[in-house]
Length: 314
Image (cartoon, rainbow, N blue to C red; front, side, top):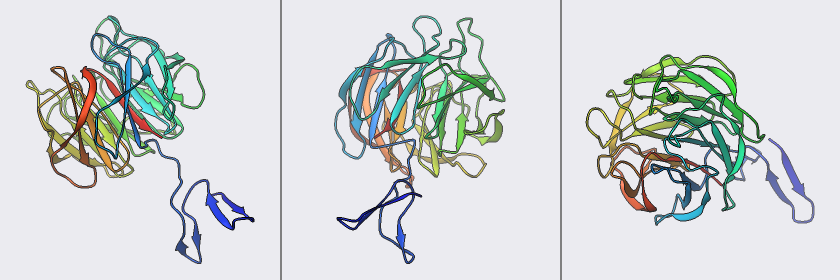
């Protein structure tokens, strides 16, 4: 924790952590997080290059943000809380593109670097420092096990991190800022597996989702990870959750407003947002992450979208 004292105003501010005086909290927690108040949705089937945003704690429709550098679907996104990174996806073939935005400032994405290989149907999660991209499928339709990472604040190509226990396509991922969790996906069935984001190494078994599911979306806060929607042979409306710090099987959370797959999700730490999905649809809906229950309508994307990606920040 770093404190700054303004001797003219007698104000005490902190860069990270919570300020206490004689054991009493006197300021909010300014510790950086991998999520934030602005939710970002990008890409989608077509493919399209659209990026749009919402303010997560205020219901309403999405607003145009800008464009990706390359139109693509089945991509993945994560964030440091300040910078959002989109990677991979399909342009008709598997793409290795990584591009980024500054979440607080609407505008077009900028080239970041390249994945080690082209892939679509991958998943992403992050800490405030590092973004991980795992799984997916190459242009030969081979399902991939490898996980790669980038340092979000520094543009450049990805670096090998380790491997998932099993290759998976249309997989999902979330994190608590320290532990990254990958769930579901074609061929990975109901498997949940995890890594420690700021080290490198192979994924370890976490537990199981309640069903074999792919084409799902995930979001999280510092405690809970939510997995919503997907395809099990039919499209489902299920939401389930895990406690990220504690291995074990997922538990039923509630239901989306309608069954959908190929959707995207993000959070501000309080609310989990699910947007778009099969149809395609333009629906955005939300849940309170700490309180199991059914989703509620939030608003609409600027256009119906499926096979898109989402992240959040401030």
